Length: 272
Image 1 (cartoon, one colour):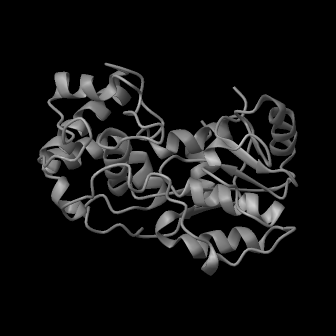
Image 2: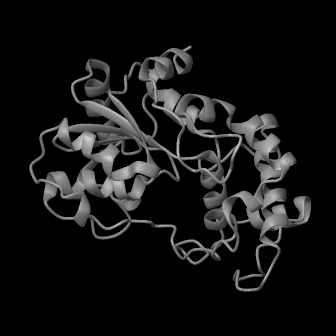
């Protein structure tokens, strides 16, 4: 299986397991800058040189050798499950993607037909009931994860613990896992542990939110989207994420974690 979703600087200063919807664009750009002294011109997800990625066949031997020997500091970044699934909905379901089309082609028409999801018309500009539509999408997301129908779960809404676990299961070990909600503190810890060719001032780094502007703006506070049934579905899908990364399941309005992440617990529970 190897190390899907793993990026590594060309200098092999640091290894990062990408978790979609968790500041991965910004992290990738910081890694790129630390090697080259400039940010990648474009979406870092499109970069095919200047950074090692498991998806690039030529990078796989270097990543494998590094991770198996734990040569470099390895980390990942996580996010509150409530805000992450909401972000996935507005970006991937309601939004028009970089290529000017809907995400995954016929996905949105299928969601409209089978689940009654409304996305604001062909270009997403019409008013629609965001709360009702999101809750129907949440039912679909649960179906993909629980029963793998009507399709396999998408990386943007599959559980973070699933992404994080592949690295452990195939022989990797994390040195640090931090929260998107306290990004600068967590990323600074990474930078403090590695040697870089070009120093990074996090206060000066722009936020490379590549999904920004794809879809309609969220019209309500986070907690308004989650009634009792929605919270039950979220817990069914993401209970390990709440437990391992210390987020507050009981209160969708609280995006901040309740305690520190225990790396030993993460490795023990995701390494089975």
